[in-house]
Amino acid sequence: MSVQDYLDNHLLSRKIEDAVNAAVRAKAPDPVLFISNHMKKGVPCEITKIRARQIFDSRGIPTVEVDLHTNKGMFRAAVPSGPSTGVYDVVELRDGDKGKYLGKCVSGAIKNINEKISEALIGMDPTLQTQIDQAIVDLDKTENKGELGANAMLAVSIAACKAGAAEKEVSLYKHVADLSGQTNLVLPVPAFTLISGGKHAGSNLAIQEIMIVPIGAATFEEAMQIGTETYHHLKGVIFEKYGPAGCNVGDDGSLAPNISSFSEGLDLVKEAIDRTGYSGKIKMALDVAATNFYIGTKYDLDFKSPNKSGQNFKSAEDMIDMYTQLCRDYPIVSIEEPFDKDDWEHTKLFTNLGICQVVGDVLLMSNIKRIEKAIDESTCNALLLKVNQFGTITEAIEAVKMATDAHWGVVMSHRCGETEDSFIADLAVGMTTGIIKAGAPCRGERIAKYNQLLRIEEELGDKAIFAGKNWRLP
Image: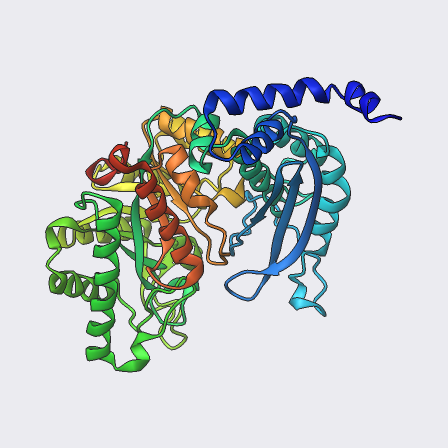
């Protein structure tokens, strides 16, 4: 074949001429680079290769990472993992071989990506997120993602989302906003975990997280300053009271002094806030994770103290009285999982008191049917969004739309087993969630999310809007 025949067969002469004309019209200072980029844009984008591997999360437990290739580049995603394995949860597929990584290996999930999901998605346009996610869901066919594994499905879904943004030549959060139909881009208020207990730390504290929410900040950057300064002041307060051993940290980098009462932890945080001088700008929030210490029909607040366990049982009515008093004594604006995952009755009773936001975590388990039920019955008034409990970005978008249509708050959440992937930061802005939980303002896998939000705020410039006092319904 002659050169001319080759040019004619592929219509190259016309395409090159068009690219040169475009460079001339644009008065491109580097015509070769301009022409190259112009012609690259003319090539339809499609997924060409998907490869998965096993990596490790912040707890040293295996998780899934995916490299998704298109003819425009490579896009990587890593999924987090958490301890929630309730009957309503999707399946985080693990091998179960106790002789290898204590049963936590994810080679089965990786095989599903490399052999099944990859074959189904090759040739698809990465900008078509809904179609991609539907193709993945259709491969599994189970309600709980038990065949492919939600960890396998989500890794590919996130990687495709990143590829779609790159093909559209927009920032990832803007692509997410397009997918979710959002026209306003709002930076969430960070809910910094300052003290950990429950299953996230080795202390005797039953409650899982004590957080601060700097809703009085004017910008996300100011919120970061408030959060980090309070964290370091808290470390000083704890050191003075309990010595260096009190400054141990939990799974997400928050401090874990060996305390046992809710009020003792809240008093420590309050003292740290007072030292910062930011009292008027900071509210508090709790993640009780009450399911962890629900025994029979009561709640054992000393479940982590073997010598005391069984001596401090509280009924659901007692818990309501306790929460009500805590909200009077401290500036608490949000309580997550105040009761057992199946205690719809008392969750609703407490929500209807209107004292604070009540966030559904394992009560909802990111399960669309349970979210619908909670909305219909007014059981709680906020959704905790753990994207790895859905399996695909499209399903997460659907859940957020349901919540916002019901005038619920939405809290974007990390997991205790995190990676350095900062995707949830872009997801929070693109979906306009009012709050983001990404842990303490320390440790790389947590800071990665906060740093990405700083970059987004900088990129938006004068157009940047911080949720601030509108954190409930931004």
